[in-house]
Length: 440
Image (cartoon, rainbow, N blue to C red; front, side):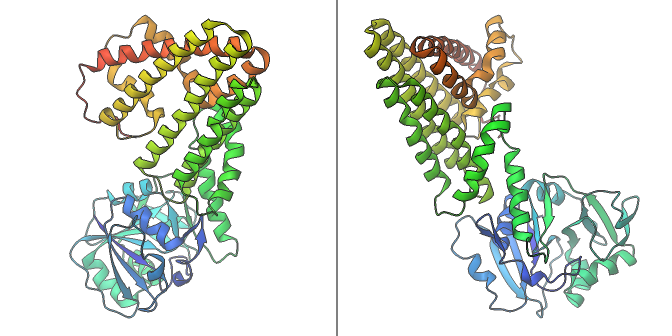
C-alpha cells in the first residue's frame, strides 16, 4: 500500500471541519506538512489531498521542501476522484501520530468490501465492538485515531457520494462493513477546535521526545535542561546540524581551561555541552529533520570536545606539576582515542545503518554468539561509564575532589579498557560479513 488520501475538507469522524487544521503550526511545522512527511516515512509515496478549493493555501505550505519526495495530486471536495482498484490509506488532516504507527497499520490485509478503522483500544466505551467488527461509533469519534484503510472500489461507491468521513464511516458501520485494527505506536492525537490544540500537540511531541533519552542521568537530569532549551531552539532558523556544531564549540573550550589550570571550569563546560548535546536530536525529531547525515555531523563534532579534553588535561597537569608522565599518559590516551574513533566509524559505516556512536554498543549482537571472554564480561559491567552523559558528570566531581592526577589516571584506565574491548571486537568481527546487520 503506497497511496494515501488526505482529507482536508468536509467533516471528520468527530464532526469537525477538516479544512481548518492543515495550516495549524506547532513544533515549527504546519500540520499538513507534518502529516505528509509522517505518512511518507511510513512507506506512502503517492498522496491525493482533498481540499475545499483549488487554490487552497495548503499547496504553498507543501512547496519547496526537499523532505517531501512523494508525488501529490490535488482534488477539491466537489470533484469526482477516479479511485483505482487498490487499497488506500485515508487520513484525516487533523491526525498527529508517528511513522511507526501508520507503518504498522498499512500492513493490514485488505478486504475490498470492508473499511478498517484504526482504534486506540478494543474496549473504547465510545465504540461498540463485536469481535473484529465495529457496530457503532459515538458522534465524538471515540478513540478512533483518524486513519482508515479501504479499497478503491469501496471508496468509489461511498466516499465519492458523500465526501464526508462523518457520513461515510457510520454508513459503512450500519451496513456491517467496518472492522477495527488496534493502534500500535507511541502516540496519537486528533487536533481539535480547542484554542490550545497546537500547544497540546507540541507538548505531546516533546513528551515523546523526552522519553527517547537513555540512561538515568540523561532522563532524570539532562533532559530537564535540554527539553526547555529545545523548545526555544525550534523557534529559530537553526538547523540540527548547526546546533550540533555550536554545542561542541562550547564543549571544545573545556581543553583551554584545563590547560590554564581551571579543571573545574573545564569539566563544567564539557558537562554543559553534554546536557545540550541532546538538543540537536530533540529539535530534529520535533521538526522531522532526522537524517543519517545529521547523526554523523553530531558524532564527528562530539569528538572535538573529547579530543579537547584529552589534550587539555595532560598539558594542564604538566604545566602545574612539571611531571613528564603527564605528557606520556596524554599521548597514550590521544593515540587510543584516534584508534577508537577510526575503528568505530568504520564499524558504523560497514555494520550498521546509523551514524551514532551509541549504536556501537550493539556490537554484542554480532560477537556474543561467539565465546565471551573474561575480560569482555568485565568490560560489559563498566561499559555504561563510556556513555558521555555518565563520564562528563563523573569528571565534574573528579575535577572538584581529585584534580588533574585523578582525571588523567582514570581516563587512561578507561582508554586502555576500551582499546582492549575494540581490539577483541576486531578479531571476532573478522568472521562476520559487513552488510549492515544492525539497524537503528
